[in-house]
Image 1 (cartoon, rainbow, N blue to C red):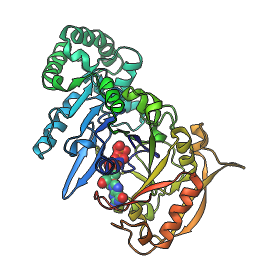
Image 2: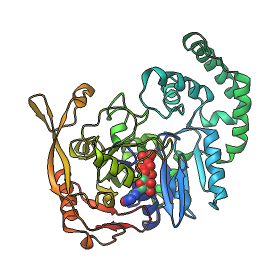
Image 3: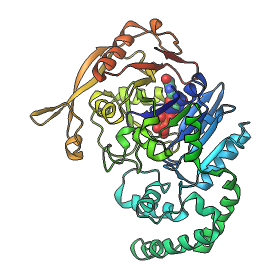
Image 4: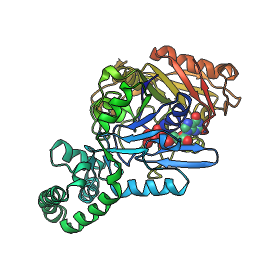
Length: 424
Ligand code: GTP
């Protein structure tokens, strides 16, 4: 697979980090590209006894001789990016000429964070309050500050002052809080500019040249399909296109150049923050899955809501992404559960829905229709060979495969890199 896109098929936190990390090595990807989102994402990758949490840098950075690219679709928080670079370097990871940031990436400014803090007080979308939404808002409104502006101080300064005219008006008159000082922000961002300028590049050219010269390129998504700004459970979504198509716009490559699209599916479902979640388990079993699966946000530590696998949502995900294969993660977390439920449809009033509704009000009131499958007692933890899985675990996987009509190519059976089954 010379080029592959990896995306989350549910509401994020499916374990993309581990799969990207594994594939990077196994299939010898030369480049790993992040194409959307910001430091609200948190991939956890465990290598040996060391745990790495990556927010903005592609997880390929943990491998030697791989080039990592932060594509133009990402919104960069320079302060947290510099901290991430420093933390990785302190852990012995090399970061020099292996990291590139798109010139046309938008930058999260101090005022984006200030505004989001105020917005979240009234709207309660459950954002991470890191300024991601307001940064994307400015991008679409054509007021954004881009990475390339860090190289041109006069441009940076005038953009900051122009934007602050509106922001400070809102902060003072609508939110009754202190205005921000444009000069202080400018000086702070010039310090970031000094440290980050060596990474700023024409990444679209870099990526296309790499593909054209036969290099293997992996596009790494963050969050998940049901959080996509267009195809997710709007307005309880993130501010970017998390679907596979986002890799093309967020990196600057043609759809013609994408060979594989792999959907990452957690063996059950989780969701962070507000929004509809038909298969949510609000009982003891849900709590025990949360504990066993460590379902707490990698960035915020917030407990994740847990529920049964939802094939209605996943079918939607298969359609809008066009998965060529899927990877099932965290199968081991379901070990020991006597009966497993899988949602195959929704009941809404007197009707049965087989498609994921666009109307949030309908989705909020859907009652899942479950198929019950027998669980398995034996541990699947660390199994590397499909044939060694308990019979009922295989039946569970086959049921998913048959319902979604997409091949399961990878099954993850633990946190570690080698706790994995390659099915093909
Ligand atoms: P986002 O981009 O924020 O959605 O992150 P993500 O999809 O990379 O998921 P994240 O790393 O936040 O969460 C997955 C967690 O599950 C991490 O702690 C992984 O180490 C862990 N994990 C991944 N695969 C498996 C698995 O098969 N079994 C177990 N037990 N843990 C796993």
